[in-house]
Image (cartoon, rainbow, N blue to C red; front, side, top):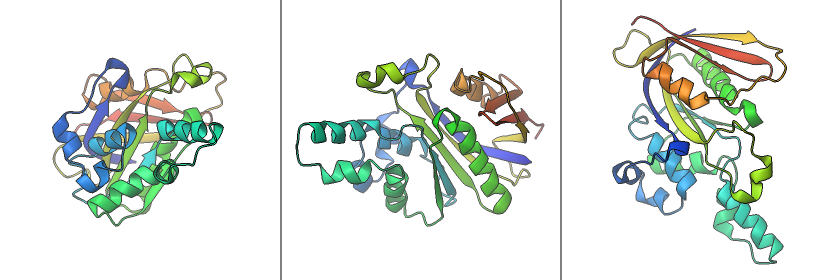
Length: 228
């Protein structure tokens, strides 16, 4: 399937990259007051990508770990749980808050699939583009570094970072990047689907590489740049 990535943004958290204050301020104040760094990072990614009222795919392996950890600490300390932390810790809370603030009315899909989360986010996004060819799809992928208490569970190639891709099937329009997408089934043992994930995505979108692959345990998405 041919798609056009009409807009994108990538946040390399491991390299210390942060969004400017202007991007954070682009999030409506009603949402900024409720969101922490995780939610504000996700919202900043989508700056300038919501004008078309896109379908949204929100993909995160761990979700808002900061809030989840705080809830666990409150339970261990026999404290009263914070209602706000509890309500905003669920996986679909951030896209829900943002969509209300932005007055978006289209459907949302929320993906959490372990180390396969990015590839499964692509799978959901491409499926929506196939089912709703006249709609745009905004995929947001985000995972912030895990707190030190979880250090024993962090893999050597664990990805910390975020990206947003605004995609459509209308490849005749101007701007962006046209990609050929192809899915292959894989049964490769020991496949490392986290290694250089965002680096490879950045190289593809910025024109440094013509091809990139993003895999899961049972499938791999091959993306190849096409002449516009």
